[in-house]
View 1 (cartoon, rainbow, N blue to C red):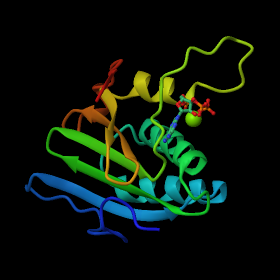
View 2 (tube, rainbow, N blue to C red; view 1 turned 60 degrees about the horizontal axis):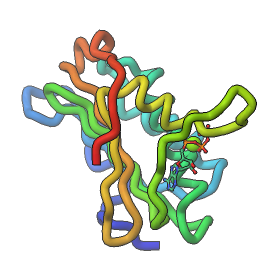
View 3 (cartoon, rainbow, N blue to C red; view 1 turned 180 degrees about the horizontal axis):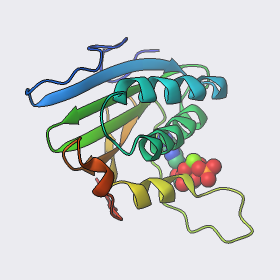
View 4 (cartoon, protein in one colour; view 1 turned 180 degrees about the vertical axis):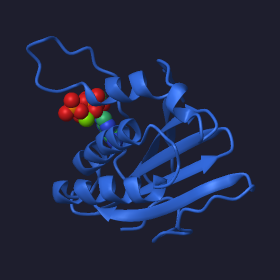
Length: 160
Ligand SMILES: Nc1ncnc2c1ncn2[C@@H]1O[C@H](COP(=O)(O)OP(=O)(O)OP(=O)(O)O)[C@@H](O)[C@H]1O
Ligand SMILES: [Mg+2]
């Protein structure tokens, strides 16, 4: 199904230049759980060669993608992932077609879920949700020059 921004495929394979954008990678994925592994591989490929905290970023993207799969309508539609690395920050957007917005949970030790966005909040500099004509975009940013991003982790807060 159509998603808010029209873009499919890897727009530009990862490259390192002196331009503002060092990585710009975007793709639509089928909204099914088995495609989340493709999201992880896509993210790792997009960030290959950059000295990022790649493991943390893949973890955050994986949480957003899992949520998008769960909340896309219809359930076997698509969601859209956009990864950009500029000179001073990395930004990931995950667009899904569901109208409901995420809310941060405070799970008890007994609760099985409710920790995905807490992980994103802990690892990213900031995260938030933006409305789109069809659904919404859940995003996070990690500050820092790509070459030193590893050391720029700090607890973030939700922005809208
Ligand atoms: N893209 C989304 N659209 C609508 N609701 C969402 C979306 N992402 C998360 N939510 C909701 O926001 C809340 C927090 O999400 P979070 O990812 O932290 O927990 P969870 O998905 O319930 O559990 P877990 O990620 O630990 O498996 C949950 O109620 C979840 O259903
Ligand atoms: Mg989740």
